[in-house]
Length: 344
Image (cartoon, rainbow, N blue to C red; front, side, top):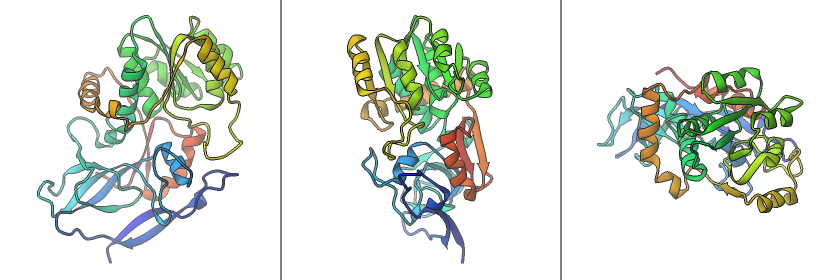
């Protein structure tokens, strides 16, 4: 029997402890067979992203919880290995969202062909995919960076933050990144071209941050929440934009465990006195999705010209996905995290 390996979400995280390896299990089922109008997809790369943590829980979120006893959700790059669909040929590479498994069926809904000549196909899950599109579109639409402005980006070496920061830099802004550890900070300035980087693990983080942004901050692109965001409030300038992309440092579904968050009154007072704009957004917002064509044209050109850089953190084997995923929340990855399920 041809086998399809799947990693299932078999239990919800314990709210007192958060996600754990025991929430996942490797299962083997029969490989599916495509019917009329379907294609069989063979997974090449699997994307691991922070949003998946919230979907492990049963609570209310901007997307439905992941189903139990089914493959964990996630974006993929896959090869068409059998086609009964007139629009797709065997051997084509596509972007899909069939989750943590070796094979999947599709009727073509949601599939997008990957331009194999533009960049490595794994980039369809990173700099040329959902993370890159989020960073570019949100920075341009909500951040509105330009010359004379100071833009601050947390998780600056990550998949979203690296594109958001480079987008602001290419728009003429002065860009400061926040990252975890000297190596990541060196990457942010040396490779990505940010004007400065601050290590959030430094004991004098707040002082270093203030020194890197002596005139304050016009746009803060927040990927982390928690104590880092608490340290940002004092340096936001009048009419600054605080863009809330993610809260990777805080498990929103674990009550009472958020560290060093600013009080609601601190946040409201800052918003009032400095007339801040606080904007939360997600990738699928209509105003951001409307910019998809602009994103692909612009970022694709920047990549081809060598003006925009990226880094991938690749782990091998579907079975490695759970541990690699949990490492996202301790900063174990360096760059966009993907699983290479099988060689291209």
